[in-house]
Length: 317
Image 1 (spheres, rainbow, N blue to C red):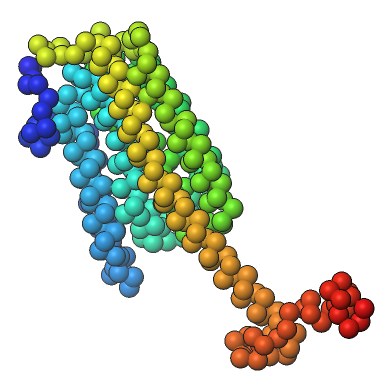
Image 2 (cartoon, one colour; image 1 turned 180 degrees about the horizontal axis):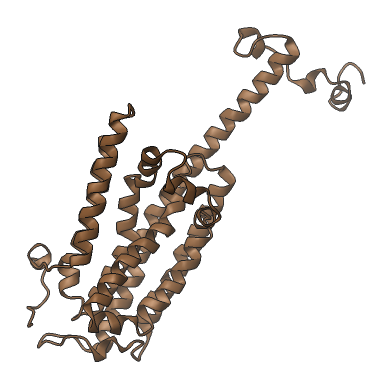
């Protein structure tokens, strides 16, 4: 089928049917709404804002799989790369921001399937902040430098399965940032921030390679649908490289900001816990109850310690 020249006006009007995404999207939306209703009836109302965010994630999934990018997926290599990046990095972030895992745990209880998976060895491995960054370069090599783009262009069912697989793998990458661990240690979050900063540089390599390569890196162009306006294959690949380079870097920034925010919150929480322990110890030495005004007046231990007084030039020197 002949397609018109890509235009900004077609972003809303150019749509198609992707049956797998439609079934999955409607199914997870129905599950989420039902689980939120059941949790609310059990006495713990589920926040409306989380429901709205999750439904926005479902809408972004359906638009990415049924909208403009899907229409031009077989005609433009950069449309396929943009769709792959959106499904891998953007859609899972919005979906998990609605906290469906926390909802599943609240709905299923401590003996539910989701809770058991999270406590399992597999769940602990997936929650490791080192796993996601390690997957990104491997995925980029598979998505943009191998035969997979040709299979996606040649067979639509393969493309449908790959699209949902990208969302699933993207959820595993995003999970350590917005997953079920509500109280991560500051050391673990700081490690995630350091890894994310390194990944910001690492993610640029596939895009630079596509942008600067002077030969084709994939057999996609042997199977793409051509039109009178189709760009040259190498030019299309170089545009794809620019898309991968720019989009991956731009999407990484919210990740880093989110991790930094969690780092600050974890540090504040741990400082409050240490202060509470120290106050309890001072109160115990003074024979007072924690929280008593007299407990706060207890002098630091090093002011009454003879060894420290000698070091500081106190009266015992």
